[in-house]
Length: 300
Image (cartoon, rainbow, N blue to C red; front, side):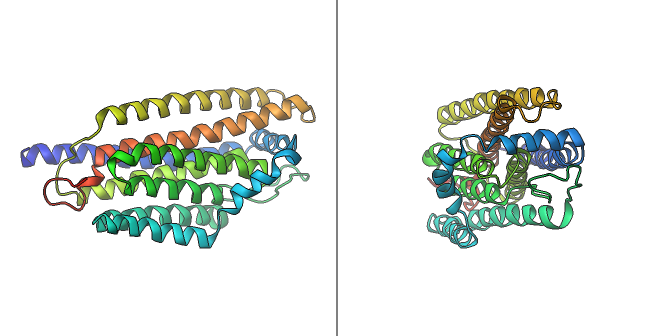
C-alpha cells in the first residue's frame, strides 16, 4: 500500500472514530437534558424506578450477587489483569490503551456524576433526589468487558465480546432492579464507554505501524450483525415502552404501567450495552489492534 493511500485510509478512520466519540458524548448531554431536566422526562425515568419494586423480593439475592462483584478493588485488579494479558501477548501499547480506556471511562463517569451534572428537584417525593447519571457500576462492568475483548486474541474476540455484553447489560439492569439507578443512568454509562472506545481507537490509529488486515471476516460479520439486530430490537422495544409511559403521565400508580416502564427501561439498557459492543467490534476491526505493537506482519 502506498504512503498516500495509507494516510487517506487512516485519516478517514480517524475522522469516523472522532465523530463516533463526539456523538456518544453529545447523546449523554441529550439524555441529561431530556430525562433529568424536564418534568416529563424525570417522571418516565422514575416510573421505571418505581416499577422495579414489582417482584423485587424474588430477585434481590441474584441482583445483589451481580452488583457485589463491582468494587474499587475489583476494578483495580481487573485493570491490572487487562494490562498483564496484553503484556504477556507482547502488546505493550495495547496494554496501555486498554488501561486508559478503563480508567478514562470510570473517571469520566465520576466527574460527570459528582462535579458536572446536577438534578433539579421537580418532585419532592423523588426516591433518589440527587444526580445519579451516569451509573458507576455499569461503567465498571462495561469498560472492563470492552478492555478484555480488545486484549483477547482475534479468534477469541467475539466470544469474549458476547460475555462482556451479557455481563455489562446484566449489571446495568441490576442497578435498576436494586433501586440504585434509573434507566437513563445505565444508558449514559454505555455511552461513556462507547465514547472512550472510539477515542482509544483514534489514538491507536495514530500509533499503528501497518494497515489493518482483517482476519476471521465471517465471525466478525456474524457477530456484528447479531449485535446490531438485537440492539436495534431491544432499543426499539424499550423506546416504545417509555414513550407509552410518557403518554400515561396522569396514571403513575397503575401497576401495569409501572411494569411497562420498568420493562422499557431494562430493554433500553440491554440494547445500549449491545450497541456498545457493536461499536467495539467495528473499532477493533477498523483500527487493527493486533497490528499496534508490530512493525511488520501481525502476530496471532
